[in-house]
Length: 283
Length: 296
Image 1 (cartoon, rainbow over the protein chains, first blue to last red):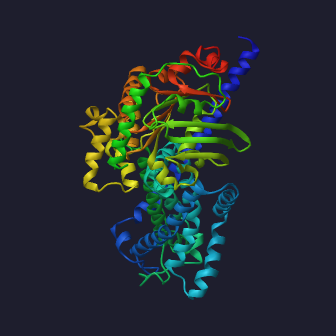
Image 2: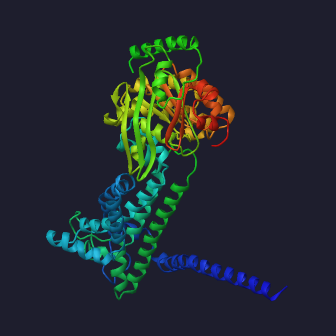
Image 3: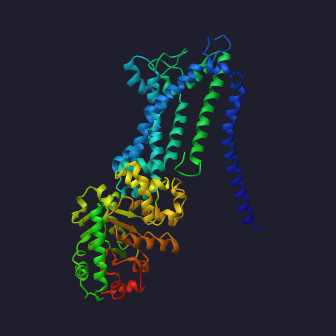
């Protein structure tokens, strides 16, 4: 074998190894985090964690029921505010927008997506928390929805653009109005992708802590309404981890485990929806 | 369409076929404006009133001029084929007739197109497309059940009540010669059908709203010969109920199904006449060159 051939073969093997090691590293990070969370948080994870309120430092036991429900409330509100706006923005961009205005909206979406989440938190503090004179689940939901809108808009636009224009023309050629064609043919054809984008978007915002610091804050007890400071899992982790108490640290790990599991489940559900084969019209 | 109008149109066909068979086959003498000569040739006064008429149609995609001054008539209950090499504008012209080209950005149309004397370009576009149906090059069934595909146009136009839908769906599928193959799986996905069946489904979908004109844009180009033959048969079968315009690459197909044929080249209508005249005795050299396979 000539030296040239040896060199080519060697380089080939080297690059294969390099890329393979990097891929392995990426995958192992997730498993390292998951393993560490299970090791540290698993011990504190019991039924009480899901059903009991937090206790004062020094008392053993207690849970984070209020933070779990609070997170669900805040994320739910964010979905109610953000998904329709994001979805219709995406529909507009994919189906109606002219060139210039669409470009602007798309660009703004990218920028909004890139705004640091702590800045969104401060913005909502100024716009919502200060006028309302209280931290609240509503403010937290609004802050998260501002992060959700561009994610949903972009993914909706993407999946709608992938729908072949032959389907649009088919519907229009039968005398459907444009909106009717979009609502009854184009969106259903892209339904799986759009839903996946929404689920991934929600999973993405569910773990955010910075926007909630200035908006929903925290609460050791049950919030008595959506206009009260409300506990959430990410902030519970933050405050627990900052505390000097060992028992609280363990609870923070447990909360991290619960949060990560929820995000993973949402991700897996999204993949399943997207990959589910069979008749496109069913289920 | 009212049943009265339909009966009226049926009469036209009969008279037309009688008058046609007794007519001598003579090539036109090299006129520039083929449509006029055509209406003189088909002597029956009823058929002299065209279903659709285009006059002086120019069409632009941005700065590219795709159609140059096209004037053409489509006679009631006749099949008109538009032939010509790729990129000659025949599909563009067809897609102007139901204004589906408007959905493409930056297009511009000039001239006049009429449907029963009414200006198509000023008509409400949804009612125009209800009256002028279209079948596309590639079968494009919606990702819905077979039933829902056929019922779609009826639903969006509010043409019938829910209880009438099954009858309309069956009738349309029968007209498209598909009923026997799908009667037991109406609620299965349309995507499970073969390509030829999908295209007949698209025809059934178009027929369900009782169009007065049916436009077909190379409907068989993605199909095998057997599926093609089925579609050609069904076209001949439905022309007593609607006027048909078919764009085709396949000259044999034009010869088989069309009463009249128009030849397009580089965005111009070169010649338009009865199909047998176009194929046996074309008046223009370009037409003859294309027909005999010298180019295209």
